[in-house]
Amino acid sequence: MSTSPLPRPTDLDAAARRSFLKKVAIGGAAVAIGTQVGPLRAFAQEGEGDDGTGTGDASGDGSAESPGEGGATSDTTTPGSESESEETVELTPDEQRVTFLAGIGLAAAAAYRAATGDEAPAGEGDDEGEGGAAEGGGGEEAPSSTTTLPPITVPPLAEPVVEVLRVFGSHHSQQAAALGGLLAAPVDAPNSTLVTEVRSALDGAADEAAVLTILRELEERIAATHLQAIADMEDVNDAKIVVTALPVTGQHAVVLGRIGATPTPLEELIPEEQGTEGALDEAAYPTEGTTSPEDTPGESDEDTNAGGEGADPDTSASGGEGDGTESSGGGATSGTDSGAGGASDPESEG
Amino acid sequence: MAEIDPTAPIATPGVDRRGFLRLGATGAVAAAVLVACSDDETTPPSETGVTEPEPTETTFAPPQTTSPEDGAREDARVFRTARSIELAMVEVYGALLGGAGALALPGEVAYDEDARATLELLRDRHEAHADALVGLVSQAGGEPVNEANNGILEGVVTPQLQDLTTQRTVLQLARSLEDVAAGTYGWGAGQVTTASLRQGLMAIGAVTARHGAAVSLLLDPSGVDAARTPVLDTSGPARLPEHMLVGKGQDGGDTLAAPAEAPAEGEEGDEGESGADSGAPEPDSEG
Image (cartoon, rainbow over all chains, first blue to last red; front, side, top):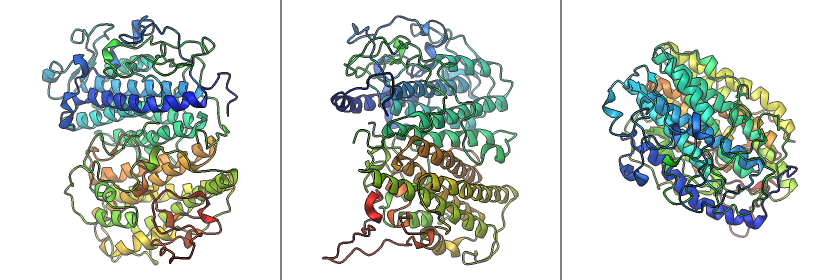
């Protein structure tokens, strides 16, 4: 239902975008997976060659590097390609939500890297300590370029726990890539507010149990966010990706609640219904690089990237493809309003 | 639209699912359970690329709905099926916990404390879901469904009863059933016509996926196999097949344990079951 204040792209635009998106999605997924390859040697024997462009791959999907500080305002307008596009592409409400969710997913992936000590560039972080004693934050070690995060210290984690956390982090990266595939420009910047918040919490964590609790609460909030988004999204095809991500996020929460030394009661981890309480909303967790929706009636959402403000160059984006700027997420609080009815026409796109 | 194969990117070990995905849509559920109950822990190699039946169709394919009537019918079918699943799960857990009746296990299974508590909790949750779905079926414009899904009970569980003699085989069955239920919810959310229905469905479906993780943790406490893929698999083999969906005029007890015979030539099987359990339900198949 297009009562949105924003003009929706025409069908032609949509068609063009879809085909473009396919390519972008592939690139995006490659990036997302690639970024996990470093730390995930155990899982991805084949993909070693991720090293998209040699930038610090372990730091991966941009996560960590840019949040916080300068990230939001670095005036980067698309490193590389079609950079003159300072004009921002206007996003539909669904696209704004997708952008927001992708940033959240990347932030979650970054949080897992911080927890496992994988923030440091590959090769350096590893020998750090088998126990996973994470000296997170690539402070000195990740000088990739733009911003660096202050180092954090995370308590040591048991190796099996680290293994699980790495898998979960990769899930978030891949979810974000899938979401990014719905957009003209993939999202490569994690939500910096969330990254900062979680890293800070991890930094103060006393022990493994505390780390697991922090991550579990993060998963619970993301699950709530997903369910909220499902109610708000108009296009069923956009919603489908969130629909398939949500259950896995919930599964993460269950596992995180149970693998520690003092398991959370199962009743708490398996509620009668998934709720939306605690959902993250864009007002509190703004997507960087947003431009007000009224700005430009952007039409060319093809190659022109949304004004990639917070995009961190490190992300090496899709190695050429969509090259990642961060597509904006409209300051418009997408958020939390019931959205309910949202009577989406199922045939959107049909 | 991004088309991702949820099973491809990261191959985490998964016994049941692997065998499950390899099989075609027909009989997939039963086959899954067979695998699940085999007590075979060896993990077949990656399944990437092996899933042949309609591999890309489901997860992100555009909806098939073509008219408001079709949409309404599909809404009802999804929710009625969901309730029949929940009713079936209640029966199954009751049996696994030692209940008598048609589904009674061949003997008493010795559960450890955690396993028993988990099975009891899941039974209770399914009861709550079944109750919640009464209202949701109505919201979706459907008539109430009061019978457990016969396809699940007769087609999937009953053939396995004799093998359910150990905690492990029971848990493997439970995990498979929860996965299939979650996959069916995820698929259904892509079929229904409004965002609020999607949300209502996934408020339950997401918890169902948690059930699977909880059971998996009993099988492998490390947790590494509990969340197997980045996104829920809703493809044909990972959800209930067509003949187990509750169409118009049916109740859960009317769902079939096996696909209906393909109509002989000349006959137009306009009843829909259309033999091939290809998964992708046709909206007007219940005409």
